[in-house]
Image 1 (spheres, chains in turn cyan, yellow):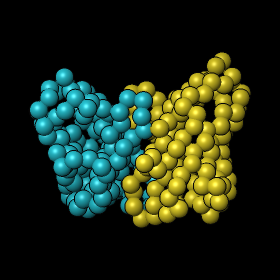
Image 2 (tube, chains in turn green, brown; image 1 turned 180 degrees about the vertical axis):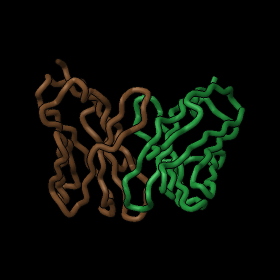
Image 3 (cartoon, rainbow over the protein chains, first blue to last red; image 1 turned 90 degrees about the vertical axis):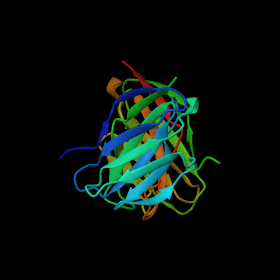
Image 4 (cartoon, helix red, strand yellow; image 1 turned 60 degrees about the vertical axis):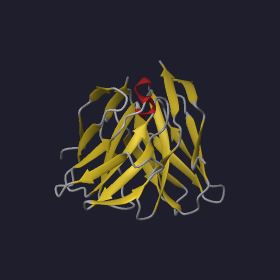
Length: 112
Length: 112
């Protein structure tokens, strides 16, 4: 059974640029959630996708957007990057509501 | 407003000791309480989880104690080992929705 995989592992961008992060969910998992984890903090919920539809959003501005594909893989897009966007971005997949979430190892995004 | 409050921020114990990490929540709609372990450079890994219909759950050396009336839950690690040195996060979510609210984390150091 393949776990959650994320790419790339590290990324360096400059302010104002745009970035796309990718996530392949665990086999059979139809729900993908994205989290932002600042250094020394707990993960903060960005949004969740269930069967290609956004199914809830945290307190993040619209420049954070996402997609889920028919194979349940997902993308996180961030436009107009700001210095405060520097963080570890985590993807988690699950079988749906109330089920355990399984996390990938994240993408470390650094904004210069 | 922080939905889940976690303490202590850091903890040092000797090998064989029993570290205890505490979490408190406000939202009585929460009904799923997992604990995650995170090593540097890795994503959070699910350790153990509990639902509010039981007061205690054990899995190996890890035990969750749950006090519904006090809206508190804790993680106990029996016979702790240096390999348990990691950051531990508690979390909470509502039924049928996979938005997890994470605590701020506890950095555990188990000395040989």
